[in-house]
Length: 129
Image (cartoon, rainbow, N blue to C red):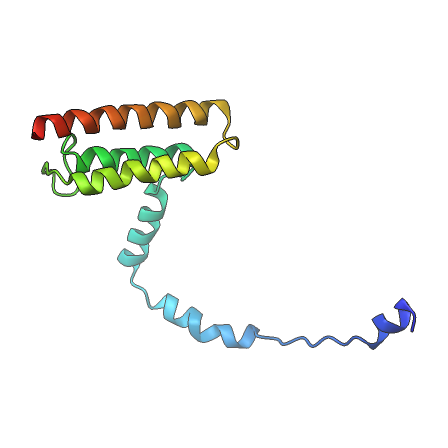
């Protein structure tokens, strides 16, 4: 059997689902204007996630857990060294897994953030003792 004969024997089925989408749109239309406005504002205020912002987010979380930065939600300072170490460990793992795949600036950021977090972790642990 030649390729042309195989192609002519294949059949395709097309299902028109345009009529099935209507109820879903009706539910969306029922959303009140203030709710829709809030959702739109939240989406606009969401920062773009890239490698740098991801690393800095984990780093900031570690600093909050070490009690060096107040929690952004409660504005209180609390220490949880177990979670702080976990955040540092996550960054170390990320550094290992991305080794050789980062550009020069990303690698410098990773190295600097890890160094700074390790030093601060040791300082906080020493003060605790």
